[in-house]
Image (cartoon, rainbow, N blue to C red; front, top):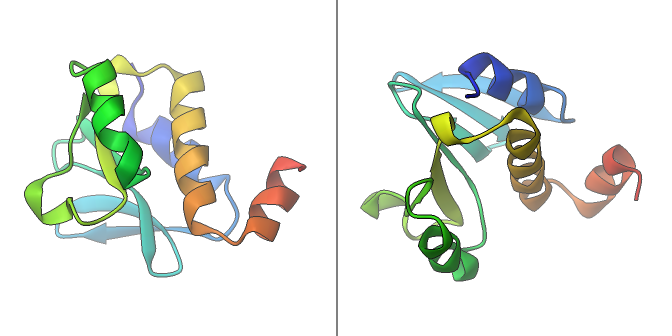
Length: 113
């Protein structure tokens, strides 16, 4: 099971990321765009994910992935239960979410593409 500290370690290793505490929730942003957010009890992690693909992701493993709360459905967003993730999968999910919000050249420079 991954922890908040594991999430922080991955997110803060990515260029342009800043951490913020907003309404008792830890959020990680690039500029003004949030790409990872933890629930108040830190058991769920919301992350940037293409809207058109999220229903398929949730359907593929509904015990792990959840649709966003109704107020977030308009965004490219989905949620995952942290207890179901390993550190490698966490890094992949967070990095993919980060790539959605940074300029392509920043992602390419960081990921070596």
